[in-house]
Length: 455
Image (cartoon, rainbow, N blue to C red; front, top):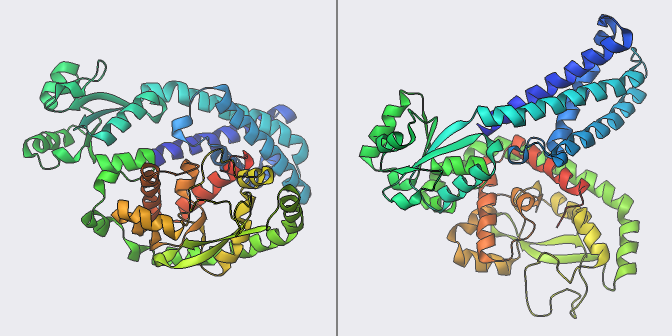
């Protein structure tokens, strides 16, 4: 459902941009511009797809943040400015295109992105408030409560909680009624049938309740497992499903062999490009690091990689040299934290722009790391976390990455509870990894870099 909604947004954006194209050319030439449209139609296909990519980078396809606010529409303005800049470069390099493209580009941007703004306004204002999916939660646990709170706080997801099925009447609220079964719940809410029923594990073996749910199929209701719905909304796996039997049936590693080979080729090409960028920028970065604090330019540390193998990771040094070996640790290994006082002024810039990760092109070319994957941890932390979380070792099914799904959702994971959350994100990535998810991670990483929001 999430991907379908994103596709609808994408389709509406493209149609809005084309409407802007037709209106801009019609007003400019005061006639139906058949010739001009013919000349610009092909290049505009590429440029409009580029606009959609900009929309994704700035977060316009994040349903949880899709609401009418100045901050939201600022993202459309930023996308428009980027699009004009790239469009100008494109037409400058392709000067043989007629229809005065440089002159028309600004008009197309003004009308096209205005239509996009109107489409998004109407989508946020009308569609998410009138076309809601009515949901009943069967059973209540920590994850179900987390979902209910989120969906009520962020109605832009398009879900309306109409009731809860539970033996405990206190599980409901003033606005979310509770019933022992669907019949009782319908009597309280005057509802005929929900669009979706989200089933918690406690009801998975309740034949009486399941028989009632089965009848709802003929009323066109969708019955989904709580774990699947949680995964779709939050982009992570709920910890209550963690078991050997679940992972045996869900982690289909053999199905990803072709993807993994493609992934390796992309990693090699990325490593080479990063190496070229490293060679160009190294003198400037090195000078900045040395002028800001004493110590080495590079930071080396042992990490745990694929299949639990140890390797040495390379980064630009971003922390003060506080111990005899040049590291920032004076009392043993410790997690970095938000506002860490050990980070230097230059180090803050390198982290915010993610430039501190550039030397890891060496790890990529040595096949120790990937461009995208779970971030590698130190062996000391791996041992500690594996003792607390037996399934932590599953992170090592794939090569660690420079950027990753968990890293995009939280800056730091410094406690056992926070690292459990990190594991939920990492296992979501391992389970669902593929070209689409990798591209989404890379585009979101670009967003982090452009906003100087690195950790």
